[in-house]
Image (tube, rainbow, N blue to C red):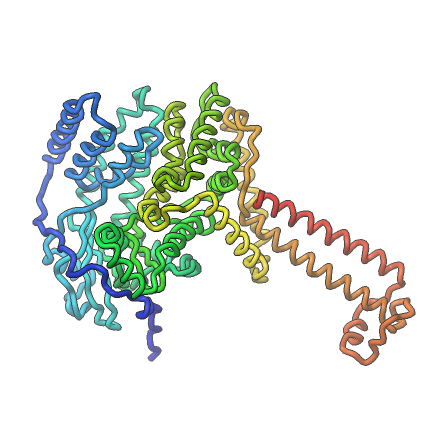
Length: 608
């Protein structure tokens, strides 16, 4: 019988010592309550109470105060309303930054359901007693949310310590009910002129998409597999292994990681910095290195992998020894199409090089709409916002929160709101991902120069692209023909979209976009490199033949190669006169220069 291959898990040497004394507080356990038709009444009362509190606060109430009222309302309702609050936190183009910051703190926390329910769900899913699967199972969950909760256990098969995520038994019915309620609330707003620019239809679609994926743990298992494969190439970044044979729509089993949560570290930095310094020395942890690892990994996820962790708040980051980090909770991820990444990469490149005119134009290319008039005024206002942010980045004494990527968004969004621009959801998600990570970055790298850090990342990205181009497999070239067909189809689709949105294209005709290496450009780049190599070798062979003492090549010969292996190879070449060889050399040189020109144009498109 063939033995199962032992999975590659976290190296035990990377497990750090404890930072906090004593165990974490366990989550509260409560019986599930049936809400039935009373949910409509509960939601109505909650919204009326929210409106009453906001009205009572009066016009003098700050955006942050209003945000706290809305956050507490959504928090009390739980379920899909938590997701609504998190989506609204993205819309800094519609609401004040302070309001969105309060909603961004709306994490999906809930009371846990009874341990006997977890046992029943697990045994029903696998058709076996819990003890047959796990040799150890802690009935008290370590975390709970509106969709499920997490238990620590040990698999009987292999003895691996694992985290077991179990879905709440009433989650599907509760979320389906809440989504219907939200649909009824938001649908009428689509027909109100004052709210049409808020793009409610896309918001409802986004909400459905999020909930449907989170209610099936197989999506998260697939995300874990993808990130584990892609992020294995990111220096000092680890993703837990998912045990696929035990994963179902309602149960997810993955490697349990022992480490220090970033939340605990940040709290300890405020409470006892001496203890943190001692822990860093014990575990060889450089917080400056950790911060750059997190930031560069997020850049790489977005611009090279086109798949990124969408919720890198400190609770989803685990610190390990030797400045390693582990990312957890892949329920919220962002997927990006190549065309959007091209525009956003152009935006980030322009910010990195302080080309704010280019940044404005790349940003506008991602919007769903542009104003019928006043585009020049819009561009001027956006440019001024970029310049205000840039001036702040040059002042070392200013706190990080005033010159971070999130601070840039806070400068831009009042202009976006003023002109009723409808921002792309992917753009909002990517900005939100940077904003979430900023919570940790502002403590780890308080003096970071973001434009300089972007340039550093792009330099390394170009080096990786060159290495990848040199290491291309021959099998890759077999897909060149298919790639050309796909490119032609994509070009046809882009042409159709351009025709449908001609007004926007006319408004942006003067824009020049900076794009990264697309898949087709990459293949052409590799092919041209191969052409150069083949042409160079062929030219060298012809020169050696002409300079040899072999009479077959019409030359008197300057090299005595008789009896050598080179002479054997040359004998396989067809005989030629010196002038014939010269013509071939000219043709080969021309082919080399053409290939060089193609490579140069592609490289200029990436690096400009």
